[in-house]
Image (tube, rainbow, N blue to C red; front, top):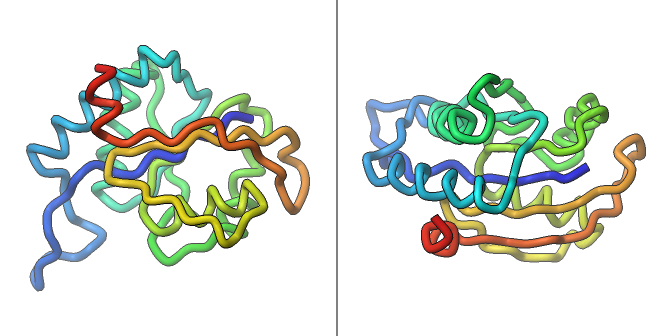
Length: 164
């Protein structure tokens, strides 16, 4: 299974009267999302499923990328992608999608990079994933408790924008 870990685009800053769950993408966030999605089409990224955190900024990022990569399909919510979740919980939820050859997970930091380290069997691995950046990890067997993945690439938003 190809697993694409996509961090949400730039969102509104935290405010006292705004729930973290409800923070929307900014104008810049929408622009970086469009550039990233265009680059992903050039890379021939075509996930069988797009799974997203229910938090507004991640959900809107997933909707935006789905419109370009999978126009006929809508993303699905995956509660294990919320901030504060953990890699084992996320892996157990992802395993339910074992028939998919490729899956895009749209979520938050630090969970996405912790999950990448978990997939690679390297818990001390540190990856700095910027907003609208992406990691690809290939996992050969999904029906096991501890995956053994291969890191294929890490792309920054600037690299994706240049590709667009």
